[in-house]
Image (cartoon, rainbow over all chains, first blue to last red; front, side, top):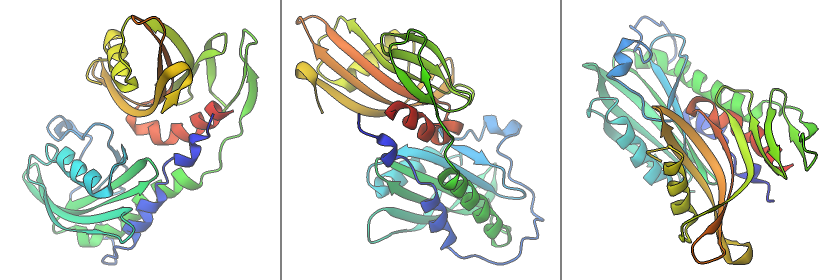
Length: 238
Length: 66
């Protein structure tokens, strides 16, 4: 099988892009933090798949990984996804796409709970993935918090892309049918004739490899088949 | 992409919501017809919650490729 790890995301490229934004010096950290994890989260719910990084003060840093189309289309989709979070007030002020067509950077204004905010978003395409970072703060505070927020985004990207890969240990599945290299904390929960279910170390993570079944439909489209199978398994809203 | 014995396969990045919990997936899905009424359905996939998917995937893919 082809090694798909070559297609994996490189978050750092987004952080580098943000690093090129420049910004005001100083970080007085005197503005009221824009909360994303408090009771208002029910109202300002983040788009699915997007998460907030600890910003260490005022402002917010959001990141997400998306299936890549063109970076322009990904950026447009990102803005659409963010509109409910900002109550429909997000306005892109300007956007720049690099000559390679692999990165887009934009500035925007919006309101969060009635408070005016301004921010930057960056989308970088890497193979079949696109990574997005969104930074914003209250309009009066971003000049002072921008450098810190960019450092948060950059550190997250560098942590994801430069961390030493975990050593894998060759493991024979219980029925002896196959070997697989596993990272610490990954546990084979079921194995049968080469198929296996593996629980990952992170909560909710895991793999299912080599599962084969016969199913009563005639579609020739794998994606359509996946939707049907998922719906039958109770995974609605695929 | 073409798959063995006249089947078709696709690498699919998808997201599913079940019991209000969102999970991210990357999988290889293949189907091969065999009697006109049924198909063989093959799947291998990696899953993780959105907040950890980007970090889990590289490790999982190394295992998958081993």
